[in-house]
Amino acid sequence: MERKLASVQCVLALHPIENADAIELAQINGWQCVVKKGEFAVGSLGVFFEIDAIPPELPQLAFLWTSRTAESPRPRPESFRIKTMRLRGALSQGLLMPLANFDLPESLTEGDDLTATLGVGKWEPPVPTGMGDWRAPFPPLVRKTDEMRVQSVPGVLDELHGLPYVITLKCDGTSATYCIDPRTDEFHACGRNQSITEGANHYWNVARKYEIEAVLRKFPNFAVQGEICGPGIQKNRLGLKSMEFFAFNVYDQQQGKYLNHDDTRAFLESANLPAVPIVEEGEGFAHTQESLLALAEGKYDGTSNEREGIVIRPKTERNSLLLAGRLSFKVISNRFLLKEGE
Image (cartoon, rainbow, N blue to C red):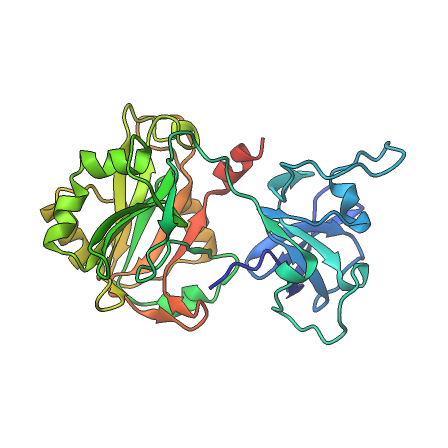
């Protein structure tokens, strides 16, 4: 499921903010954001920009990056994006504006994706050095790694309710995929979106450190996906002294599906590949969004750094109707997001 960085959303509830006369909190899906008081009513539709959205340079949005005292709007800074922040003590995640502020068709309904219509971009963290050069497109038989945030699709909690589940730590690094392309018999070390040329770069250094090609030559249908963490990557929030790999997926290219949790762990152990740490597992999922947000918070072991969050999945792989694909989603720590936005 593609992330909707800008979409038509319905205001589900409005809540007052203590000691604030001009603003209030609006609930959209599982998100909440600060809006002008009286601008929306419960049931109103608006244009919702998610966090990490890079809004277009439109006059009606210039207030986001232009000082109130400026005589005229200034160009949007290149690094500008919608962030998690606190306004008058209230957590605000996203931007909600009336539909009438934009030149949009009258036929729009709740959930319509406006990302392309409005020209909204997605902020990505700066690319670390040492990542290597482009070699080829991402191998077509392997799925790319990308989880939706629970606030965007809160209904996934109902889809998982009562099922055996596992919650793993989200290691803050850079995504890596390793596989052998069955069409060419070539070994690939990949970033999130492309195969990387062999050399002295993080992807291939990790492949050599853990002898991943030798592992996959014995199981050529399998692709291993995980996170590379260490010095020089995302501020090294895990506090590692060297580059390390934490696997979270094993994908069977021939079957076109991921291995179940227990099979994944057994394979990684037999291959001497480290797996992402387990935060919690159980036989009947009963978490709420609030309890998951609380569970997502904490420090990476041995550090004072806020951990990024958690990933939640059933122990036995299954599809999600809401996600139109694999039932797997993430919860990012609000303390992490607030720290990141400073």
